[in-house]
Image (cartoon, rainbow, N blue to C red; front, side, top):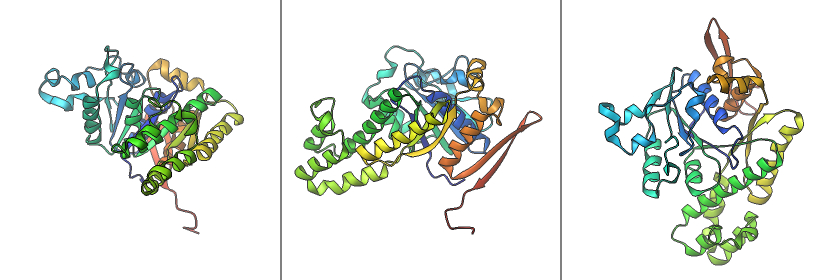
Length: 328
């Protein structure tokens, strides 16, 4: 499989857009191709991803990670829960424990280090909604960054804000020692700059005025940031075109090349799978939503993936896509 990035972070600016459903079924797809996958519920304080996997009450999660004595003799290994799906382990969030969504920086860095060092081919992280630094920092550790949006304009604009926040946070983290650049970028402390820096060209101009030697590095960060986009709950062709609008917004105002990975249609199969606590890809890998998810993973991995269910077993076919001009 042509796929070098270990961590896939799935986020978005708005709640209720289906990030968890998309992330869970992406993880299942990769696991069925033979990859060792760990699915991480990083929506601390409101974790519910376990329900999509048929796990009614996770025995361990990040709550126990901060209290190692509660894990027993297996230690941190006990945090990786069986899902009943070959090659797929699950790491639960902290449930609804009060304060669990607001862990301090020291503990957050500890969690990030732990996730980065997990032994797996791929780690998929399902993040909470919003653009606070906790969420954005988890998103930015991904080698692949996936933004999930629905076609509504409010969701598209929230997704744009999320992409902008992730980009600005990357620049901010790179220039921690520069108070001038920090002042430009930290819009929470400097709200008057929000409109001035709505377009990345304005930020570039201000960086060039104050620290021209840093402009090349800023441009490099922008070039390296290439998030993917999935549009969920598509009902008509017009909905897919809303994704194209987001790509154009990101390019025009942020100079960020967002890659359209695919879409997921609105379907009773998806709703039924949530009610039944069973990933729709497992229930029927040949349903339209399952085909959509396979296309999303195919876009990420540069492969064609085809799953078929027969005699209660799922068979996998994979083909590597050749670059343009090869094989002709």
